[in-house]
Length: 500
Image (cartoon, rainbow, N blue to C red; front, top):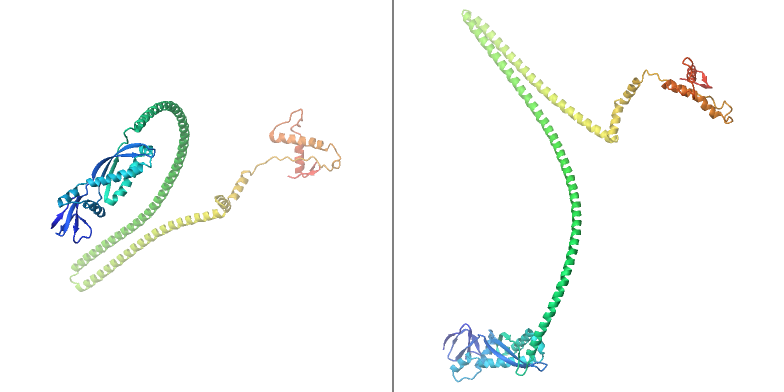
């Protein structure tokens, strides 16, 4: 009886009264009617060399190392404890030895591994086992683990070593020699192929290098052309933007100047108003000071006169006193009247100056409003009359400009005496009745030639050549002069009446 605690790598197995099967714990009270033992869960290694035969009836030796131990779960530990406690023992010392010794467990595991491995190998060829070593190892572990689960054991690791020939067999020896010779021959082939591929690759690289250089040169030329085009486009856009910015700056400067002028005019008007107010106050103060001085002077003079008269007329106290009082009152009243008059005049002057300033301001404002309204009216008239040109023609008509121009032109040519020559070759219908005369056209030309030459000579001074015609002497009249005089006299020239 006592309280028992197991090590970190072991468990307590308790059986007896109050326990139906086995109890696997780390620590527990053990009563007199109960028994306990310890089981270790540390894995252990063991090596085996398995003799097996493939599906081709080839024997080989398979060395392997397995790491196996109890599975760290309560159910698996219960199975493992039952296997250990199932060994017969005469006393508790033998049971402790059985708990720590694992010879019989290794025998069981070895039998399971040999049986499952032979089953797997019998269904595989030697080539599959040799080439697919990992697949073979996985199959062995899976099949062995499925059998070990019933004993509560677990394969932690399995390492399959190199396959070996059994006594009297040289399969792996010849296979190794074959692989060595094949690798040597393949190495020679690979060297020759490498040399060939190197020469081919070098030629291909040279050609590819030239092709890539040509391609890059062409692409570079195209890109340079594109960049030049983009640069020209960007320069054009920059110039356009700069022009827009300059125009905006100019407009802003103009607007700022107009605002400054308007502000200056407003400030100037305020200054004029303040100046007028200051002048008004100055004049009012000056007039008040003058009035006060005159009143005080008059009062002092009256006091002095009153004092002199009172001293000179001591005997006539009552009369002189009455006279002095009367004079004093008259003087005071006169001074008050003068002060009142000056005050009224100052107020009148102030009112007049104020009204004149207001009138000037209103007149200037009305004039500006009139000019503005007139400009607006001209703008409306221009829109109605079809633009500034229509408005200009309307203003010229309204101001009688065209009439004035006509009069000026008439006065400019007044007094001129132009020479006018008129001639007629006669009535065509009177000479032969129309189309019956075949020489009528020639005769008309010859009849019109002398007046024409005479007119050219009279107006320009140019004479015709002597072989064509000879002008009459200066005292004689030419045909054109005769015709003009005849028309002036109201006669007929070749049957046609002439009037000037």
